[in-house]
Length: 212
Image (cartoon, rainbow, N blue to C red):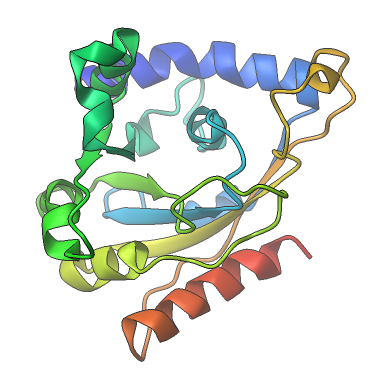
């Protein structure tokens, strides 16, 4: 509940800031109709900025003034950033309801234990960046297996989504309002087939298609 309240409170400052500085646009919100009470994994790329999370959350549909039906959007973060040695970062992660991911040498069950538990026991909305790292050139990179593993273990619906214009969004050009930013939400994926690698490729293809 705390994460939901906090995200609703910061929604409008972020949304209006994006509209002012980047001519922010959102497409595909109609694809989320009927998913309000269901567990959803948003698979989003390319991951180019540390503020991709707040940008994506600002793309959620609203009911009147509030985006409450899809909030909180839970994000994943490496467990070490929850340490108090990072000062304000763990506070922000706590307030936004961010979930821990443990580095485990490829053991996905251990690594994703917390998001699996959340998706199994609620109508949670989790945003994951399948590439697993920031893109150095703004292009969609090869996906990791974590998104598909979450899907297999929880049965949550996958919604592919793409950023257009988020590369170097924190550059000085943004202050001069020369950037254009768009989030495109794709159609839900209910079924995937094949190995983890095959299904990961399917998801990345769906994300890639949205930008054309």
